[in-house]
Length: 207
Length: 207
DNA sequence: ATTCTTATTGAGATTGTTGTCAATAGTGGC
DNA sequence: GCCACTATTGACAACAATCTCAATAAGAAT
Image 1 (cartoon, chains in turn purple, green, brown, blue):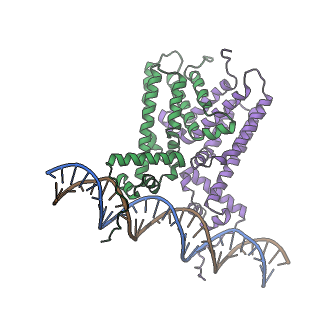
Image 2 (cartoon, rainbow over the protein chains, first blue to last red):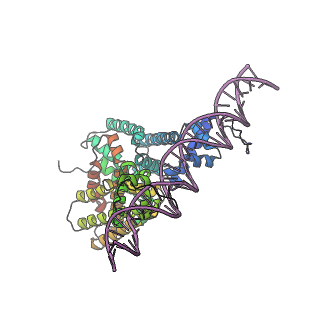
Image 3 (cartoon, rainbow over the protein chains, first blue to last red):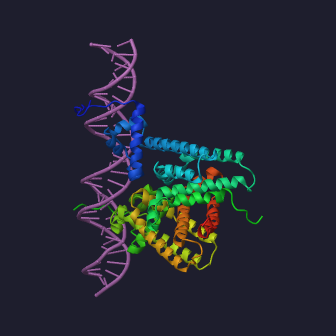
């Protein structure tokens, strides 16, 4: 029967949803600002002014918090991608617009650092929902495409690969690489946007 | 005067260089196989069958080991890049050969995971040596290039950006993305090699 | 052999993180 | 007001990682 010390500050009682939302928000800030290792129960709790045991109460464990964060960010990423792809298919934006949106979610949204973290910690399967979006996207575009330019499937997956990898790379090391080469940060986006038509509708080669 | 327990196994005495080399080798294996968090003094020591205090003796601290590993890998990366660039400039290989070499060092060499780790842990300045290589490369190529295709500097940095970011992205998340799209791993290399001439010698646009 | 250097080791001390457990205090329902 | 539910907390245990320190042993030099 251990006795408990007198309470110093007033408790703030939140709904479970709100508590979880606050924690995930804080964890994401930490991820983007200081990297994956900074996401500890203590750090998140301190950032929110609550005890770390409360986080365990809501997420079950430290791993639970990590998984929840990954899940949330993957959901957000897929959602943004879905909308961007839909707009592009409907002809409501230029290649540059599309590329910008993808680059933005990987960079500012933290999806790039998130993906790097997930892969580096050996949990690649957590990225599967993104794969699902990509696959249905490819299927949809194929249905609406004309067959004038050879293998439709190949062209579309090539373009997707190009944009995704470039956006990812740009988000994680674009800052370093850009400053090394003395180029402004947006350069990569322009290059990709200009190359996109070449991949989607390549000039006919020998056939 | 604490007494020390009897020695169980024979000590293996190495030269400092050999001990450091072994440790770095082991640390690199751990990085590639299990991610940055797996590189602990204990894990490396266990892998080598030595005590972790010995690693502290040779590297000063856990951070010292990390820095040494980063330094070594960055040196190797820059060296490989230098040679590849030199060969490509001398016309001794196709675009595909060049791209393959860069992709390979980022992937198998672990440079991709290394770079991601460095950036995620906020030590981007450790990548500066790579920047130096890239800059002298750009200067060299500019000197030998003909001026027929507009802004030489812009074209060359664009191509470098493209290859570097793509190789990095491919090394870190290429496996996941590739399997999501049901494409073989080498697809990205082919795409980049095909696009390279378009960036280096773009078809003239309106001028 | 003897000495000297230093690579190597075991034993704690320390710290940070995760996790358990019982006690406490908001909040809504009665 | 009273009660049940549970979000929240403090105390403490368990563990892993880093690091200090003195002791030890391998190899070279003399």
